[in-house]
Length: 250
Image (tube, rainbow, N blue to C red; front, side, top):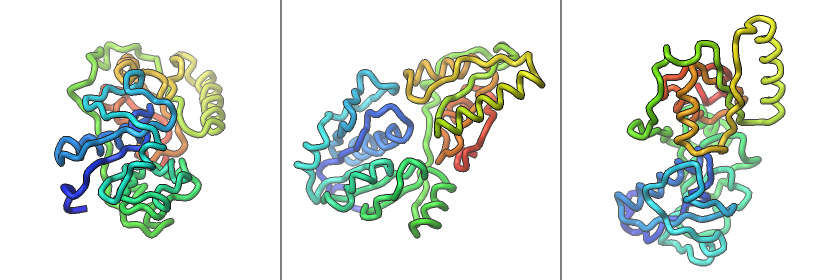
């Protein structure tokens, strides 16, 4: 893919879905339009809407349906897809240059191996792809924009004993960990206060960052992470991150 000017359009699957993986895929499409002049389209898969999502999108890609994308895509187009859509078999069915940004390892049963190129979100995921699928995928790490962080109190001015739990990942593993942790804390550190758990993708990113920045400690009990974007955001807010590393989270 060293001659991007030969491409006409770029389609981003689920660009406006409220999660970190599709947020990164959106930015790949954004870069291709901004820096290479290839018009980007957001392909809707679940009635998502840029006006009611958790992120703020400075490039508003025209939103089309998956069926429209499949009818229009040609060999001169680019498709940006996350591994969680592997069951759609885009690599087997569609023309064009198909790029998979692999942000995790537990959101798909079997990776679509007919895509043209793969990039990994972390060294852990790159090693996973190499070991399981014999793929050598370069790493493109996620990022956050420091100029968009809300103003929050200094760490010492936040409540000393309050912890904000983050609800994400395998539900059963999270619930068992959360119950057991509360039992241990109640016995050994009863002065610790837990805020209402923060659910992944439930609130706007600006509100999420403000809540994270209001406490000293951010607790993540996600058992499996390809990277861990929200813990990175917590550290940017000056909040101490505790909990599981989730494999790729560290």
